[in-house]
Length: 66
Image (cartoon, rainbow, N blue to C red):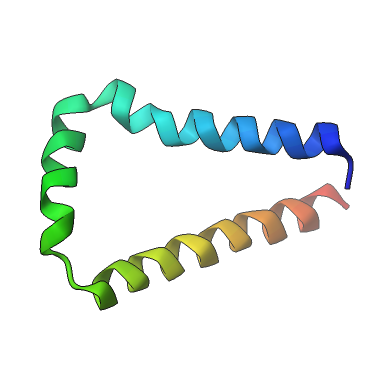
């Protein structure tokens, strides 16, 4: 893997992660206040769903790129 490509990916992740905070700051403040109320199993479930979704996007992109 090329270092430049890796840096592009990191940059895109940071941009995507920043969109909710920039576009919906009040919503994000309320959401972040509620996170301590979630159980660890709920947080892990949310995390695995996000990871599987990300993997799905990568696989789909790889298939469409052929």
